Length: 411
Image (tube, rainbow, N blue to C red; front, side, top):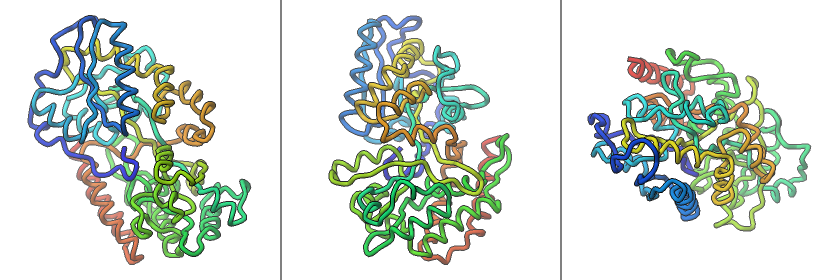
């Protein structure tokens, strides 16, 4: 996911009109010997690209194979073009927000349930990449949202560890105390991928348990949005665009916000703000309980791939605890297995809260067709900056659009 926003999911474009007849590869079947594989990734930078290539090379050396890693300029666009042109990569990053679109159209091989480590992944991640009751593709890592505090501003305000907010009341209290001069107490993106956690913490959901009915228009979801609006109207919360920041990390690093809601990618602010000190905590609990979002990619394999067996073998290697921890060392991701994440939290205690919160984290809504509806919802949320938005009206509209999309997705 993007460090700044999860953004709008890119449509499958022409791919939805093209029947998948084949995919990249040299026609090999059976074992991995002689296979030539291509991996398409959405890379955060050279460190990630080099780490994935090194891991692929290590697997290839043991399997008489060759692997080429391609860092996409636009992963969603290049992936959809590959499927549309009958030239899909043998293995690729598949985002949580695109998964349902590809699974619904039958473009993904359902291999994950047969992996030797299938029972070691976090249940929440398995749920994210399950379609029609089958665990489709193996999650490669994960991120959760947490409360990130600028520790210098925190200390200057006379706050200590005893003041770390644990519920909505204490979050409001510390945000108020931290708001001073050009620094606002709290900031986060004005979008469902951030405000949605408050809706969840109030006890709200967007879809019922069996995935047949939209539940967006509920008193709980309204309470979550009204709490956010209350903080904003009091001046203790400002969205990044209101404080001349591109995203929460920039607001934190520049001292424009004392607290932000972001994920472990917050470490990236060190490049631009090397002197900013921060600490991460679990999000405060709401009246409906604890909740946060989890974001992930899985390792996708095209359906009917000639190189399917080799790709599955490579995925087993890439998702082993040892290799996931090597990726964590190289570019900071959190392993998707419970045992790997536990080792990560022990090795990197500054990120332990992100791991702990995955025990109760949920994935944002992501059924086929939901991305466009969420985009409309985000656009309507922009009215929160003026304080004049009809939040009940926004949820009513969201409910209607979400139900229509859900009905279409369910056939």
